[in-house]
Length: 230
Image 1 (cartoon, one colour):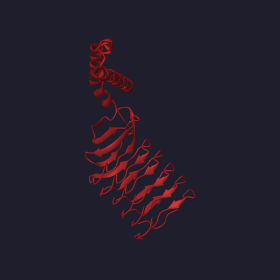
Image 2: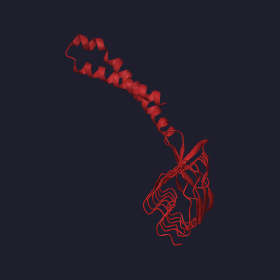
Image 3: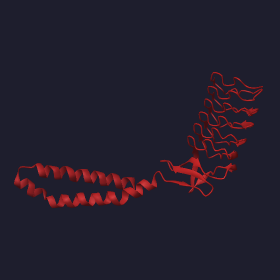
């Protein structure tokens, strides 16, 4: 589809160039030799191709929709799916690992922001990134299951939730700033080898009493574990 559109565009540019030359020509013989009617046909054909196939190409890249259980999504250019919102009934939810036979690889910014009807979430191993503030202010969110395959947890991703414990898979390399900030019920945190960075204020103001930092960690941001209630 993309090749067809590009070809049509080049075809149209070629025809327009020569037709402009025709209009600007002062030489009657040159005008006659260029046969304007042929260029008009070329331009019309190219425009028809563009009109016919452009909507199909747009639909093929960037499709959006909502699943039957309320997960809003969009298709990314590399034929992957990002979860962008949620309108379901809540409770304990499981994010699908595929939609329309395409892998769900990311949870977008603010996708579940302030969804106070969610009490638990299972995030499949197909998801590589959790966007900034994706679950922030999900004040009833207690249980979160992350799976191997996840790489990054975005800024404030679980900030101000009711999580009581979390295990970070060994595939995760980065916990961004504020990721679990103000999770006042968070007591148990298990970090695994493979983690590289823990961001600024990442676990600020939680109930964590002790934590083992993996040897793989090379950076811990300021106040990452400050103001813990215990």
